[in-house]
Image (cartoon, rainbow, N blue to C red; front, side, top):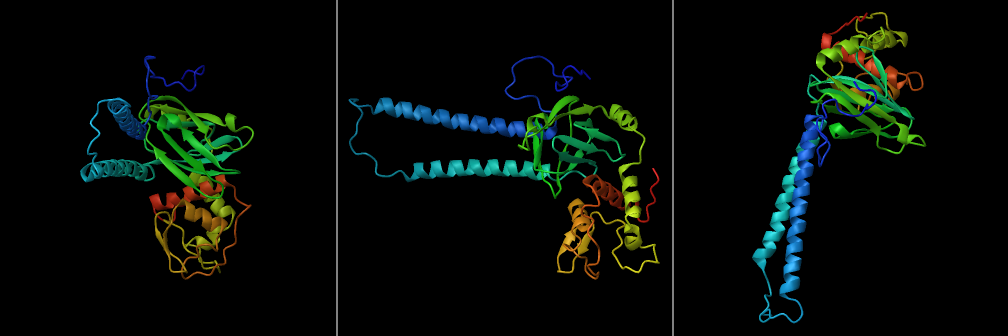
Length: 333
């Protein structure tokens, strides 16, 4: 990597003029095609209007010999055309854009999860093996990556221009987005939501590496427990296992078993059914009376103020590991 030009792609090529900066993801290429199509469409419409205005200005100028007798009093066919054609174009554009939007928020099952905490004025990121980064995000080439994000203070917005994605990062809730890098290099990472006096300095970079290089980088980090192992330790430290572990027969509190929870349908006391995802787990920890599981008493205390956002991410990673590996997981890595 070239430290003197941290945001220049390593394979930038020539300095020839480009209407748009080269994209670094498949979704970015799709976004560029849509933008260029819109630009071409608007340009053609504007050109057609200019031609018609100039033609009529000359043809029917004052003193011209144009025949002004018997002016038409209606043009149903023309009106139908200029109504139906824009409508059809707008519907096509909407369907195209909606399809891309839906894809952007439906990550593939094999997407690698990275947790992001925004705060004034930095980006804190953590990989599943426990390696942490500040204002840098290392990604493997060709691997779908899902970013699960929250804010520690005010609203921020993660903007990755080369990947053509932007997502608000909101305190008190999780937002997520995913991307598959298709080009190695260094790319900008920034906040695009005014978040305070040093907003302009809330910058970072994304380093896309070949898979083998990324694996070596990930394994070369500080030796510490993985994210799921940290969550398992917190699960025991805060007494969660005393109530939520089905193998614990000595507990006097009856609580749902959490093994394999992520992705499962949960029936609630008020008759609703929800899918247990990251947001559900976070709300259950901080707002336990919000979604009480059917058949259980609302006796769980809130852990607001006791667990940081990083701790909650670790607990989510632990619960996800029980889903992936089966029940009664014992983590020691």
